[in-house]
Length: 459
Ligand code: HEM
Image (cartoon, rainbow, N blue to C red; front, side, top):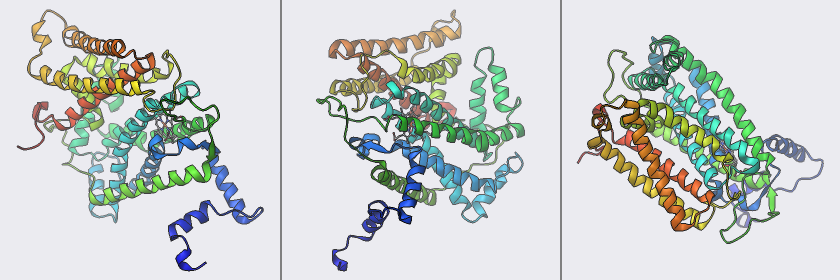
């Protein structure tokens, strides 16, 4: 074959790995069988053709796994330099940044992968929810997923303290302080999380051990179980058009190479993106921790700012205990609610499902914004109803109003569109998620000194 007629080099490499017909009994065939067996313990042998397009899953589950891998690799490298004691932790990060070759780069990879992982896992949760991937045999895998999400947040949170700068010290002080609001067990929970009454050497050792040993081992074990459950149900849910019925026996293709090649490409692009980001933007480091001087504003890590925002509007018992607890229980309960039908595959169930979810999200967006503003400048149930205990005037009453508004919205959607139970649950989920995102964004960008509302851009 002349050079002009040969395919491009990447295509040839690709084909040589995945497409070359193998001679039976050859060494290459043996290697391929070993590779297949390794991969196929965790992934299905055949997958439905219709699940291949990128826009069905956006590769989010695989991306989460790649980020976990990057975190483990970069984390092990960081452990060679990091010293978990209040006297030496900050200095070891400085040394990593200024003296160790590629130290800042490795720290950047760890930092950006960790933050991206929270976002990607959350998007993966949205994808699995909005394609109805939690029914039937997938019910329990959703529960494993929720545990993975909690594990990812816990890993991030325990790592937050390690640099021992002002930001990390005070963020952990705030969040562990929130535990004090839990009725009866509050004090015990707070001192357990801090390994003492104050944040100090024992807290750092506790967080370091959880972050570098306990949580990674649990995450990897749960991830393996999560993958295996996907394999057991022969891959992800199969999409179909709104005006079609699901296929009884969808056409399938081999996981190796058809899906593996796609997953491999996404992994390479993601890894490259993280490396470039780590090269261009260093992970931040503030002044060394000073237990005697709190920064203003003192904020929790960004993924907890939705909860910190709730604390500005509701009594602590509701803001940091009951509402977050209801959120986690609600997430775990999603697969076990009673539905009209088990619809899995198409995004947003049906055309009407898509419209009701969009309407619910838009209304929740507007209503949460209005609530944040009105509560900041007008509402003051505590002052208006001074004879009631704070749990009622600043907790039960506003939370009941909030959920009452949500119930009203869902009832209106049901009456005006004739939505099914599945579509109503989906609309409720869309509304609650949107409200949570608005609260988180408010906490990140619109809270300044003294946690007052501010405009983040200078005008
Ligand atoms: C470290 C965190 C996680 C990792 C590494 C992970 C990984 C994966 C992978 C690779 C898949 C198959 C392909 C794909 O959907 O992209 C998958 C499917 C699935 N994941 Fe996750 N996941 C994680 C967290 C979660 C969370 C937070 C949830 C939801 C609460 C969840 C629920 C599911 C479900 C229900 C499926 C089956 C999807 C289907 O059948 O269409 N996962 N996960």
